Every structure is written in structure tokens, then in C-alpha cells.
Image (tube, rainbow, N blue to C red; front, side, top):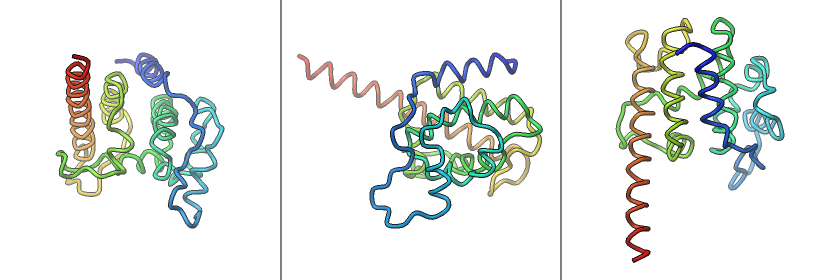
Length: 185
């Protein structure tokens, strides 16, 4: 898929995402540190207007974005990397890739992963997988992974994780449909 086709696919997949009312879940938070401040900076900003510099200055904020805010702002990072593979928001992308880089399997899933990625639409998963393939092939040194033994290992784990999350989401949707069909009888 060419760059423009991939950008359009990402935009279409995430088009239903609305700007979140809150970008950070403040429940149970007793203190706001600079990383949470980084996430709060995104409040009220349209993802289409964000720049590489915005992400680079606030790269740890990615970790603290609520699941809805994460999904809303993610297309910005992905598209910036496609548009300029030599000058992408690498620290922000590294932050979210750390969430995806795990040995595949539900035993390795935790709230930072499931809260952000489980339940996406099929189109969102497919766009994310296509972006991972694009990034692996076109962005030099973007991600190797903490446990990697060489280039591509982190991407392989991230891709497998997204694929398993998609399968789990589809399985859960089928169960929900079956139970709602049984409830209506």
C-alpha cells in the first residue's frame, strides 16, 4: 500500500473517534507529575493539528492518555511517521510501542494494553497492522524492542499482539451477539 493510501485508511478507520472530553483519567490520582501534565496538554486539541514537535516535547504523555484519548490522538503519530519517515515523533511512538511489545498471549495482557487496544473496530486493527508493516519496512531504527535480539523482533511481537487483540475482540463480539440473541427469545 502506498503512503497516501495508508494515510487515507488510517483516517477512515479512526474517523468515528470523537475528541475526548477528558484526556487523562484523574480518578485515584493524588498528584500530577510532569508526564501527566504532558498528557493534559492535549486537552481540546484536534489530532490533525499536532506536529512532530508537539509529540516530541510530550512523548511520555502517551502513556497517561485515557483509552479514548489514546485512540483519538494515535492517528496523528501514525500519519506523521508516514509523511516523514526520517523525522517522525520517535519518542512518542516508542512509548506506545512499548505497550505493544510483549510475548503474544492473553497471559501477558495488562490494563495498559487492553484498556487502549481491546475493542477497536476491525478497520482500526487493520490500519494499525498496515502501519506496523509500513513502519518496519520504511522507518529506519524506529523500534527494536527491549527484549529484541535484532531488528524486527519488536515489530513481530507488536503485530502479533494487535492480531490477537483483534481476534479476541471479534470473539467477544460474537459471544455478545449470541447472548443478546438468546436474551431476545
